[in-house]
Image 1 (cartoon, rainbow, N blue to C red):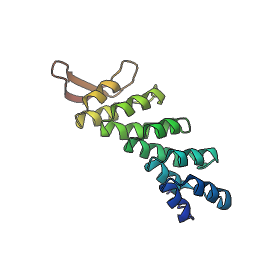
Image 2: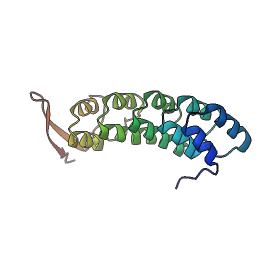
Image 3: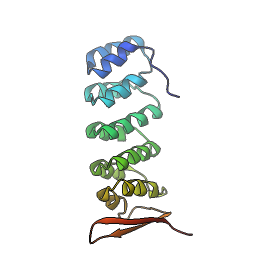
Length: 170
């Protein structure tokens, strides 16, 4: 369960892009800053997000991963790129699922370029994209270098449609 920030002023300052106030509050109170950080990410407040990261907040990977997922869901590309440098593959995979479900081809491509997918099945992402009629996302996920162990995708290339998905039998 996420830790709640003890300082509502910090959260409000982060949400409203007041970097100087955030800087002062971080210096004076040293809270964890989790909710305030995620709020700044959700609102695309790049300067505040950079300030948090420069000051070493948040210190835990859960918070950065949650923020990455929110940024991907909201379409905040610059923040996604920044957070990709700070998180591990599990959280990148979660953000990939979010981007896949939304059909955001740019974000799917960006996350795939960072995602260590060699040992991870992308079958669920393919199924999600297909069931939401995100053909371009399915094409990205089916690149030859990607593993989709466990899923067979049947495409009608002539009409550009996904015909069916089925599980492979091993």
